Image (cartoon, rainbow, N blue to C red; front, side):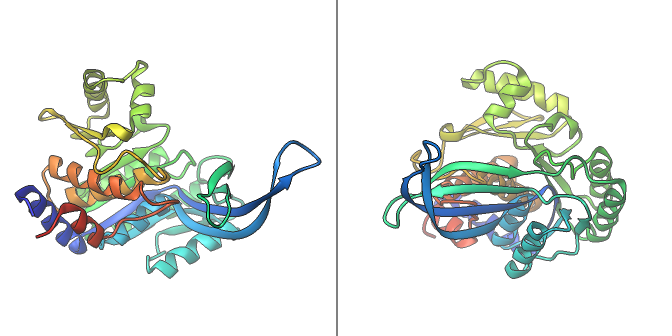
Length: 333
């Protein structure tokens, strides 16, 4: 193993001694599989013969699952509805051995569900035909906010990092994020943020992990070359008052911007023949957060997250990466 590889492998070995709180939108990822049968007489659409259904942890729940799969202790903190999807999500956590003490149940609220309809024969690659999203109406209600803050306070003791995973479903309100910042200051925890739609709300985090499209939208200008990424990223760093920014760039790898340092462009790990990007951002921020929680230099944390991201996009569906897979990807000892 090369010297950098050995250093990164050493970080992986330390993951088991870390505790991470994952605060955010808990989502049920549902996959409905069908085999193409015929064209409907009712409309020019394909009829699929149902074969199976699979339910996985999505959104902040997937980020928590990734932290757990990497060997660390994790405490998910979020809201589910008093509905079948919420019960199924909590059951998935329990079967995975992930604590559910931080989960608040809100009556009248819908648990977010992303249903992907997948078509394909038994010997063929199954392709996503359409996705149907069921979403809560708005932010968590004040009593749920109170309960989230109570759980955050109770579970934060001993936490080395707090990962905020915001998918726009109203769990991480301004009040909840202020609670995250207050708790992090008290326990000395790293705070990382992945926000799908409202990243500028999360001022004062240690690090954020936007993708290139999100950076472009925030900059209001194309970021199609390294110079543009650097310029837009620097502006966002100042806007967020963050220490670092890790921009995921798809087949072009990643860019790490450090407020107290320079910008490093990291090429993609492995092949650019990607199988599925579903949940890849959750894997990246989970690995990045854990490495920072271990005291890693930002460039080492980014490099390890890049390897994890390169591994998970070769898997289909919402997936995780194990320490053994990371060690193997880093090379022989």
